[in-house]
Image (tube, protein in one colour):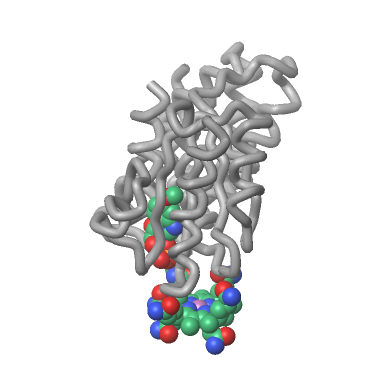
Length: 210
Ligand code: B1M
């Protein structure tokens, strides 16, 4: 459809009202909601993700773009059949037990949703038991743990160990991140993937789900 590039551009600038107007126009011209999501919203959000990764835009711009994306998604959901949205995989996401920092985790959520993944956000202060229960209940492909404190990072090992104990370790990939987390820490706790930023996390998550 001709105005997909305009929708993507408006999303990148965080113009929620314009995004909605352009989506109404695309729907009136016969575009399907899934086509608009794939061709305009996910396209725009993935460009923002790349720019964020390259330090060309910063947290406020990402959050404003995400708000525009959510406005567009809300409008499209009303036009879609209940089962109309094809998800590319399911991720259970949270900040680990004892840790209340959620800004980075929320960015990871936005970027993963921007890639077409279903994200079950468990919030902050999430125990290993909650991560694993939610992964089993939702048949998740991924468990994604964020930690900002050196004192809470060790909870990530508890998540890995509990997955092994519950017999789901070969069914779920465990991704970890947050300011104090490193690749060597990831290796030491036996998680599957460490990424330094939210955009790289969403790239890795999508690759795991393919
Ligand atoms: Co806190 N805090 N804080 N804090 N806080 C830090 C983390 C700290 C480094 C500040 C400092 O001392 N310099 C320090 C930790 C020191 C340490 O452990 N070595 C600290 C401390 C000590 C504390 C308290 C203990 C302070 C106190 O009460 N005495 C307390 C702890 C509360 C608790 O959690 N139990 C506390 C509280 C708070 C606030 C509530 C005030 C607030 C949080 C608000 C909120 O999140 N809603 C806060 C904040 C804002 C910070 C700083 C300033 C900023 C964190 C942030 O949001 N950064 C932080 C200092 C700093 O980092 N400069 C600090 C922006 C965000 C986008 O980055 O979360 O790193 P980040 O996410 C990045 C990547 O890490 C990655 O993607 C994002 C970028 O794309 N990423 C992932 C994150 N999760 C990922 C998961 C992935 C992959 C990538 O895969 C699953």
